[in-house]
Image (tube, rainbow, N blue to C red):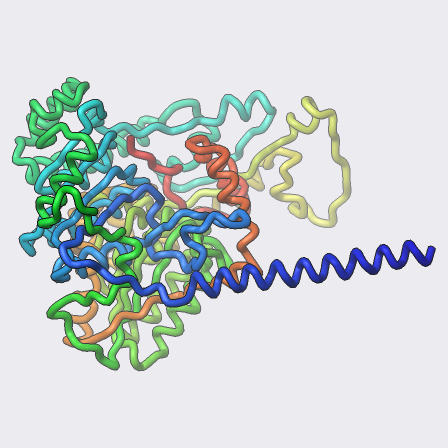
Amino acid sequence: MKQFFKFVLATMVGIIVISVIGILIIVGIVAAASGDKHVEVDSDSILHIALNNTIPERTPNNPLAGLDFLGFDGDKSIGLNDILANIKKAKTDDNIRGIFLDESYMLSGMATTEEIRNALIDFKKSGKFIIAYSEVYTQSFYYLASVADKVYLNPKGILEFRGFSSQVTFLKGALDKLGIEVQVIKVGTYKSAVEPFFLTKMSDANRLQVNSYLGSLYDHFLTGISISRKISKDSLFNLANNLSIQLPEDALKYKLVDGLKYKDEILDELKQRTDVELKSTLHSIDIGDYTNSDAKVKGEKKESKNEIAIVYASGEITGGDGDENTIGSEKVSEALRKVRLDDKIKAVVFRVNSPGGSSLASDVIWREVMLTKKVKPIIVSMGDYAASGGYYIACAADSIYAEPNTITGSIGIFAIIPNMQKLFNDKLGITFDGVKTGKFADMGDISKPLSPEERLILQNNVNHGYDDFTKAVADGRKKTQTYVNSIGQGRVWTGTQAIKIGLVDRLGNISDAIHSAAKMAHLKNYKLESYPEQKSFFNRFGSGMSSEMKMHFVKSELGENYKYYDQIKSVTQMMRTPQARMPYDIVIR
């Protein structure tokens, strides 16, 4: 027995020692990674841009970026904020001679791609060059690359140019086999987020709206390429419609690219353009590393004690604090209160990139936006999405900016409650029995269908939520509630369409929104501050890091099939509270 306790004690001490050493190693790595990251930019350098990761609104606060260690995500994700800032910085940096757009899959949304594209167009005003190259051009990357001075394709490569398509996954057949009925309560003819659960194909109303917004997005896509490549829009339409671009030679023949070259030939051209000898190494810096250079934007106004706050709201809208990928009503509301009460902050830019979510959480954030507007200017800048709840939280602002290909609107409310009685009784042989003290004490129980009276109660709740939503939009946009209802009903619009019907004030990017906020606050000199504050590595390590690692593992294992997992996961979230959420996840191919 004595020997046993010695063994146990030794084991415990060993575990403690190993744990302490492990923690010290992690601390050491973090300290090293988060230390001085300053980088020097050689003269005659090119800025290398390869965008193969998802692009968040802000660069994650991750000192281990680039390290594959203990399951941490090793990719060097860079946020849209730093991408735009670095392109702007490179425009006036004497050490940067041009930009090399390298093979990119562009996992970003269309409005994010638009912002980067516009930044590149502005960069070209400096007289510096942009060269684009890829072995495979997706339509999204080609849209970005089309602004380059020279667009090159690998001689054996692929250029996708076939038009847009959008597909919905319908789950009703699978649910029927399982004996699950999804009971839907909604307001809005076009509120099609719930259609996959009770239909096997698009409703006529949904098909109408998808045709409408997809056509708007495609028209903008063709227009942009037409201007950049000096090819008529009709010609581009016909090329895509007839699938004329099947071989690299076709892309060259129809002038979508300027040449067919291998990577070594591209590198030689870049050396020639930067006056570097062919036998020497090309001077380049990755856009992520360029963030840590000393380069400043020439002509930029001096620092000031006056501030403009940028409050970021990105992801699905939920109650509570949320996390790095969701909009927690408590966290965003706290940030809005903070900037509202800070006298140094003279104006607010509210950056919204959200498909919506909980209608209650959306209303909580809307209230803070409305209160902020009473104190200081607040301008909304819409990202890829600002739809349903994402529009709800935006509508009270002084002014709203959107990109032409932002997805917005979807003003509607729904709730879903599953009825799993057949699954339990017929498939699994499980039955339930119990007692209750009130007629509606078990309302919403998934083991039984809703009674007509219960369904009516829930429908009234959803109707009330829709009335609140349309009233908030009517007040914020200075429209009648009747008019808002006519353009609401859950219908999705693009930014181009939204400006025509009064949901959006101007087409523009986040920089345009910042300039507007400065003008409203009568500011010439100001500095920008971002909110909510991003969690430090150690805070994330102690709270949500394990869930982040799990999610990274699931994504890497499922690959493209992750979207189905995510769709099923979102169903469980929709069951909790009434939702102001856009129809499914819009994926444009």
